[in-house]
Structure formats: C-alpha cells, structure tokens
Length: 379
Image 1 (cartoon, rainbow, N blue to C red):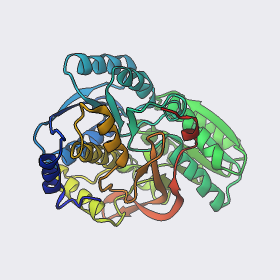
Image 2: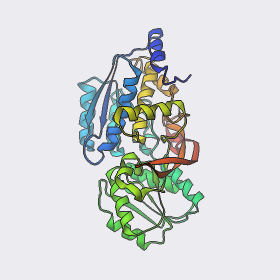
Image 3: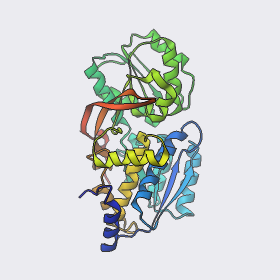
Image 4: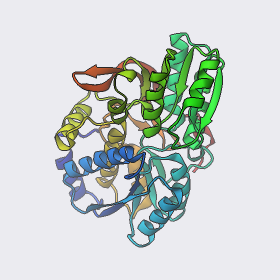
C-alpha cells in the first residue's frame, strides 16, 4: 500500500495507534551547511524537514549539525549524537569521503544510517551493512546512465573528469562501465578546486568529441563558467549534480541545452512529486533540487517505518525500512538486496523557463536500474 500525501498524516497516526509502533524517535542529521557545498546540505535538510512537518507526527525529533565538509568534524559529531544525544538514526551526509568515515562507525554502534545522498561503492558491496540504507542512489548510477546516453548520441571518445575522492572514482568507473567508446583523456581534479584552466587546456589538446564531467556544488559552477568562456564547443554530459537548480542559476545561459542524468526531476508526473514541488516552493520560495527531493524521500521512508515498527526492535524496524512503503517523489521505488535503490534514471536537458534555468526530462536512460555491487553484499 502507498500513502497519498493528502492522507499520509491520518494514515500514519492510525497505524501508530493500531500497532506496537512508537512515534518516539530521535534523528541526528549531519550535513554540510557552510562552505562551498552548503547549498547541497541546506536542500537535503529543507526537504527532510518539510516531510517531517507535513507528517504532523509527534515524538519525532531532529538534531541538525554542520559537518563543514570535514571528515574529522563529521566523525566527532556522529559520536556526540550517538553517545550524548542518544539518537536512534543518523542521516544527512552529502560527501562520500565523509560517509566512508561516519557510516561504518554508526552501524558498528548499533544505529541505523539512512543516506539521502552519498552512495560510495565500498558501502554497497562487501562493506554493506544491514542497518545502512541509501535512499538516493549508488554513486555509479547516474554516471552509468550518462555513458548509456553518450552511446546513443554517437560519442566515441569522451574526455572524462571528476574530483579525486570516492564519489569521483565511482563516477568515472560508472561512465566507463556503460560507455562503448574509449576516453580521449581521464583526469582527477582536487576536491574543492575552482580553477580549471589546466584541465580545459588538456581537453582542447585532445581529440575528444565530447566531455563528461562530475563536479558537484561550487566546483561545477566554476568549471561551467570557465568552459563557456574558453571557446570550446564540445558537447558536455554530466550527472544532475553538476546541473542542479542552485548551480544553474549561478551559471546561466552557458548551461542551456546541456544533457544530464538524474533519477528525479520536478516534471515527473505523479501526485507525490507534484505536491512536493508545490509545497517546497511555497515553503522556501525556490524550486526544489535533486538534493531536496532526496531529503524529502528519506524522511518519508523513515516515517513509513515508524508507522509499523518500534526503532528499539531493530529487526522489525529494518524490515519496515526494507518494505519502502511510502510514495516516493520518483514514482516506482524499491530497495535491492544491498539496501540501495532500484529506480529509473532519466536524461534531462537544461532549459530556461521565464527567468529561471531548470531541467526537463527528455528520455529514460535506464529502467529499474540497480547497482552491480549488490552481488558482493551479504548481511
């Protein structure tokens, strides 16, 4: 059964009164709220808190902390939230290097971790854990879809680049897994880098027929602006992380027409998504981003589990999370055996609607897609 957004609060309240479920649950959200990646964390936070507010559930509390995009800070915050704040569930991390530092420690201490974003390969395969769920994607997925799109577009020698951290490695691995051609060049940049003159010079000197890049947050803004001013006219391909709402407004016209891949967009026509887009814009006076949608779904997954199980009964609560009995803004949603999503991934095109730069879906790249690492996962 799936709850509609109009009846979710009443249905949840009824379920809580009719079962042994408990509404008393404490969430620790560690996310990036300052520095170059702050927009991503703010969107995850705002999407999550919107779902909590709409549910009207009492007894659910959320403690929010800023990791400053620093792994050591994230680990310290996680320990504090678990040991001092006594949280039941952790969530919120944006960056895969921070997830690699926090998730294993969280699950080792007997807590649940629900990822609204980072999905490193190491945590999807042999490093998986029964108490770890990724509600967004496994890192490779959107890049695999980009590789599949590149084949269809007729590209045979893409120049590929990403930051040198776990998600960047997964990005290029995913693209090459699906791409039938040979990379004209392959680069790992510094995380947080803002000058791409050297990389653009290497692209210019190559025989590339296209450029695939993964540069989230401020990195993507810097690269796109510099690429537009370089005079290069090779077509760009990337994941949604490099073409999301915040980035597009900062880049402007230079991004129009670029194709990118995503498991979500504001024009997916289902009741849950249409209600989400409308309510998010009313609440925050901006269009929701991919990150906001993931925060929203993460909260609704948690709320659906609360409706049927007490978090203190870990086996029952885990089973309730695995059921994913909520209406995702993506439409069809389920977990694979490694607790990572099975979902469609789309190709989007950057457009301009009035004065706002945004995306529209133009085709489906991968249907009911799941990651390759599940075969190596055993709980």
